[in-house]
Each structure stands twice: as structure tokens, then as C-alpha cells.
Length: 111
DNA sequence: CTCGTGACTCCCG
DNA sequence: TCGGGAGCCACGA
Image 1 (cartoon, rainbow, N blue to C red):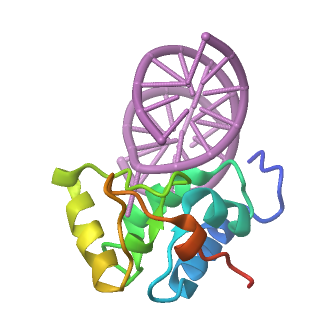
Image 2 (cartoon, rainbow, N blue to C red):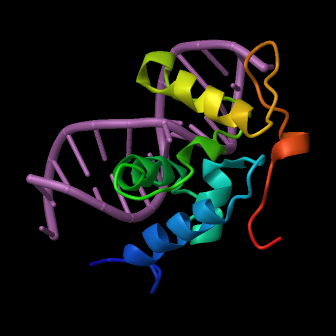
């Protein structure tokens, strides 16, 4: 028990889940933003981990979470292709390089 | 508590 | 933007 913050552990996970659920249709968010908004700017990797754990049991829009570069980090055979299709169904357009224009689709919590 | 893991991000070049 | 390397942090066992 060496938490620097009085609000770690479940708080981070809970916040992350809430933030992800708050992402509107047709928008996307990055791991870093979710992590920062959840309370740990450096815990971007955990956001992905949470998605892994929670998306299987909860109805989180995990496909709306991508990396800071606007691309899907998941490998196609791992579900990246599914994610791309889900996003396209919501109206998100991919670049020729399968990249998303964050300028248009990036959504930031709290606003 | 300790250890391994990971859908990240930053820092060069 | 791309790549390789290093750092970070939370969760599960």
C-alpha cells in the first residue's frame, strides 16, 4: 500500500469506465486522455487493460478508445478489424493509412 | 506484499 | 510520421 494518491485502485478503474461510457457516438478518445481524466496521466496502459477486463463483462464502447496517433493499436487478427468496422458504423472515417482524424473525432471528457 | 503483463506514451534519430 | 528503447502504472494471481 504505497499509493501516492488517496484515490487510486478502484477509483481509477471506475472513473475510466465512466469516462469511456460517456464517449458519444461518432467520437473517439485516447488512452492517455482517459487515464489523465481518471486520475493517472501515466496510466494509459491500464486503460487498455481495463478495456480488456471490463469490455468482456460490461458494455463499454471499447472501440471508441484508440491511441494518441489516431490509430488502432490492436492487431487486425486480435479485433482491430472489428474495431475499425464498429467505428465506421458510427460514422467515423478512416484515412488511407487506417488513421482517424483526431481533429474531427477526438472527444475530451468534462466537455 | 511481490511478480508478470500490457489495446500506451515519450524521447531520440 | 516511423522505428526502437525506456518509463509508468494498475490489475490479477
